[in-house]
Length: 482
Image (cartoon, rainbow, N blue to C red; front, side):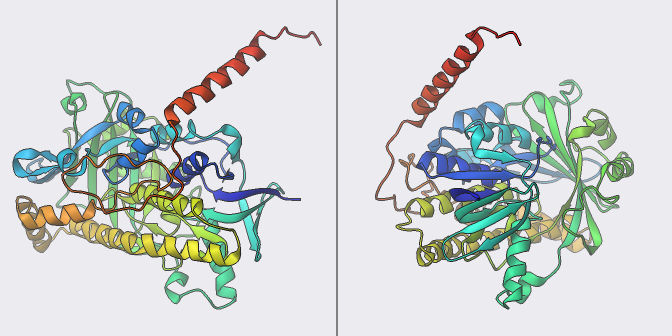
């Protein structure tokens, strides 16, 4: 017999973990099925924007996030001789573009593994089932049943595919829909990747050599190479470390099968090969990229494929997609992880207010979720594609367009457009809303009729004390000789 719960989350992505925390707060039964047995600390960086920080505050995570991160001052774009092309500033009140004053907080940047581990500490360990690779699933009028590669079965009222860009839930769902001729043609297109990227996080570096690492604010520095297809990013993070990224726009999009990250094209040998090919590039903070590579543990380096794609189909039956599984974007706008987290906030709020779990109510819930989030994420994906194309355009027209955009920063129109991008600061409708602290108000949001009034920080402290008490009892128990 399958193990049963209300919500089954396949994939321990950031969006999946935030959804788990929200369901935990809501008192809704769930499990997270994660195929990996051990977490591999891939060296990427996350920039949490003012869009999601109110939700993090609502969940009692904001102070911990600030402790692990740096506020972002903005982005500086450089030529390969390190002369400045232009800047995008987030903390300049003189120009009227201070994110904390306008939207309530600065963007916060931190390593992906640090955020991942923080989220995990707020989920009871027994709720996360590791080593659970999904093989397939079957939907009926009353439930959805998942079969894992280890022979175990899990059943739930709702299945959430939060398993990333190469989502096995999406692949299985689309196959089922295609068999009954329900899948749109656009969603039948093969996976095509337009960028390849090498990423890493260094060990602590010398402040004398890299003084930017000692500053309170993190300024992202990006070198746009005029005579090569590579773009280099230097991102200061806490601990006198930097996250770095080297991306290359491919001459032609390539079709890559899901699940081939260990193939000769994307495995360890490929990482070393790409590392050798980019060592000579100018580092945005001075020196070469090779110097950063030499200070980076090999186990936190990765070669990844990037693509901007928005899927039309977000749900069918009792199965729904979240985050990169239904919308993914290259990291040039830094919005992918934020949008996944907002997906989780909207979906959890709708599940909380669901009057019953019959098929009709499930359909209404998932349809409203898709109608709420799909148009917004479509704009984000489209914008990411345009920004990526602009940054890699090495022609004189690309240079002219970049100069024009940087010159618009002090205008009313620019501020208005950025304001529009920060309106959807969703919070969980079933928890007390945190106050709006920015001059630019967020869009109105209706609270649930049954808001949970609890001090979750005190509740977490109580649970931790209880856990320590149980652990102490175990440690104090006299050993038995065998």
